Image (tube, rainbow, N blue to C red):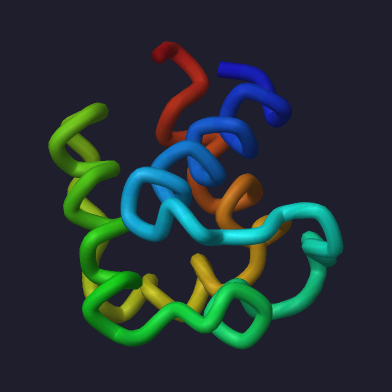
Amino acid sequence: MTRDEIKDLVLEIIEDIDEDADFDALDPAEPLRDQLDLDSMDFLDIVMELRKRHQLQIPEEDYPQLATLNSCVDYLEPLLKDA
């Protein structure tokens, strides 16, 4: 997957979890939880959806690396390079 495809995947998952999510003013360098008002359960839903769709095992200690859209793409890019 390309970086843009990964970004779209993350946004699609967030939209599935929170259909009211507003991506218009989203800053990819700022924490998603703050911008989209995601709680810890929403965040876990995102991780679980990545596991379900792409069989990714994301260890809990790596969760901070999924804080922003940019960091999500950076973290997921090597894991999804052949997807």
